[in-house]
Amino acid sequence: MPFLKEEFHFDGPISFTMYETDARQIMIHCHDCLELNYILSGTGHYIIENKSYPIAAGDIFLINNSEHHMAVHNGALSMLVFVFDTGFIWDTPEEYDYVKPFFERNRHFSNKVLQDSPSYPLIRDSLLRLQKEYVEQQDGWPLLIKAYLMVALGEFYRYYQRLDALKTDSSVAIAYGRIRSVVEYIHEHFDEPLTLGQLA
Image (cartoon, one colour):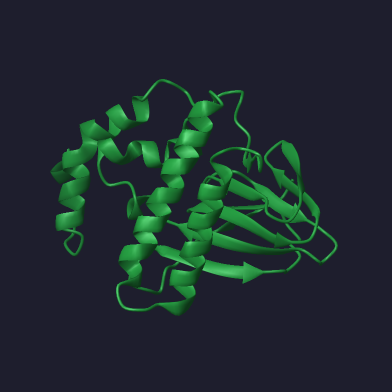
């Protein structure tokens, strides 16, 4: 099945963006960033990889940077879409748990958060605070965007841990620890020509 690969280019001071949409999606797609969705109104189905989830107002979905997905609806669906780069909130091995629900999943994992979960109101409130900060952009808004996003991701982590939906192996974090010095070098010398030999 054909699909669209999207690349996000962040125009602002942070690698995070948010928008509200009611557009009908006509093609399965994926993109190079992480995504959170909050359904404001409407119904339909969300196709994410080989799963289909019913959509209702208040639903929250978590989608990683390789999952093919598309919201199918009759045009009456309105949602908030939050898109951000992994580097915005994951810079050290210790911070890997913030993005673990996107990458380290087992058979119990569901992209859709159950609304009767104790974590749900905390995640929802963090997303709504993100929306407010992004729309108003008052002094210090990039700091609060990161803070509320990390709170939301911490609650996602707790939610999926309670469901036993995360893998216990932390191989990705360990691998990151091995290449951390290379990543730091790239960050420090991003404006210079780099060779594989230098990085090795």
